Image (cartoon, helix red, strand yellow):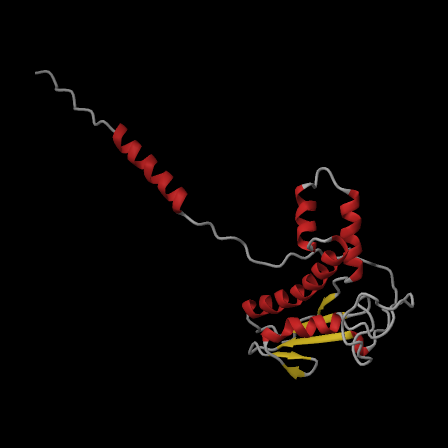
Length: 203
């Protein structure tokens, strides 16, 4: 007796369904972005050069403890007040820079007990190893925002545009650099150089 041929199963429709499900999951799935802080590390310097002597008034010390409490210039401070305090320090213009030039664009109080010049002003951030990552990023953002505010202010005064828009234009035209734009960006950076020092975290 001849064997009957086994009926074939049409898997074409199942493949279509699987393909549609795959497209659905690819479209609806959200991909987590890496979180972090964009920093360019300085090159390794093997030369034995003595570090310059920094006056205490040119240091803006920010401490963050394990309980996420903020201590600025030995006084407890809320995170909401940090940006304004950093701006007042950077924009003080109390004296002259290394070249003996007074800051004629600073709009601060010119307090002799605060920073001499934006070129000399250094913000020192130190945190505990048990500080939460979220609070550390929040403090970093406020300090960088202080620099961005001052740079935007001067860019609008000198070039009638924000410093951020200048950076955006530079990134769009990275393959055909605009020398004039690069000079303007560098000029603003020189007016308020970002001197943000991060000390080794404590245990």
